[in-house]
Image 1 (cartoon, rainbow, N blue to C red):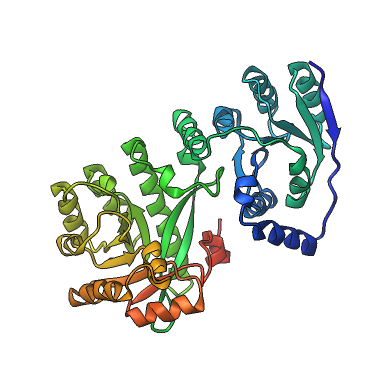
Image 2 (image 1 turned 90 degrees about the vertical axis):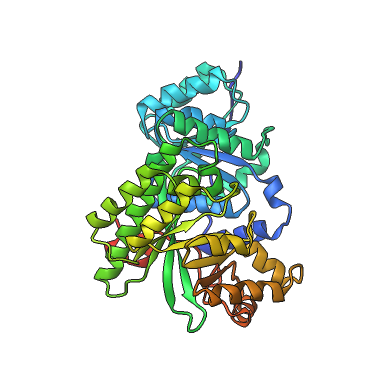
Length: 413
């Protein structure tokens, strides 16, 4: 099979032009449907991560793999374009190109040059018989990639199913936990807008915009989810220690499913983790994710009571998202209720009665339960949240989730 090589040299665009290109791409309401799925097989560094983020902002879906053991996950992502650095790993180069040939990959493979192994990888791709191979000068910008996308055919794919297959392969290869990272989203007091705490969010570093709910879907192995939740506790403890050293400690929360919270292994491990990091009572809490589960399992209630005696506060997350009602608030020993952003935004848009949301908040106050409104994105949202009488707010109005080093730079890893 003949090799088609299209040498598309990148146009080096300066920052202002790059930002305007991103803004223009985001302005189109149908861009997400027109975006591409792009897989990077490359070294991980800050510059590459920034390129990935910018391409995501343009409406594309990005995945990254860094070693040969993740190659199957990469193909499960169903990419239209693969950007490969032949120098990242000699093993990756041979194994991955051979796998593309075996799986009859129909997208475009772009090899990075210059590099020691560029010519070798190009020859290997030619021998494999891949249909579409070209090259890209390194270093490159997000705009360099975006400029070539109109010439690349979008392959048929099944959207979120591809993401779930990507996760399944990472799990099978034992690569899910090593690819988890954590960001923190601040919670603000609605009284004075001071930071009242942070929420720990688990992200998949090699699939940055994947829905966090997909990472720990109900089908996920429970022991794996317990381990991942424990990693989130460790991340929260690291941030707390940095904030304490900086003289501005606030409580940090960790998301936890009902299944994990009800498991004795997690309940036994949590106090060990807290003692190891010298966490003071009340400074690391649990946000119980609001998922559909029938009734109130006795083990869940018992676990919540045990954690309460340890000084671990528990919040009910995403209130209103699932089968939630006043009984859930009264039956669970929680210290805080977080109103789901979709409920708040429907209230803002007139689709949900503000009086009912205020009634929920007043009911919580009567039981000395704090309230947080999620999804505050504008100054008008802030005014409405204050009118409703909630204690705290959370949302992009104050900023997006960020890594530890963005909060306390000198303590960053």
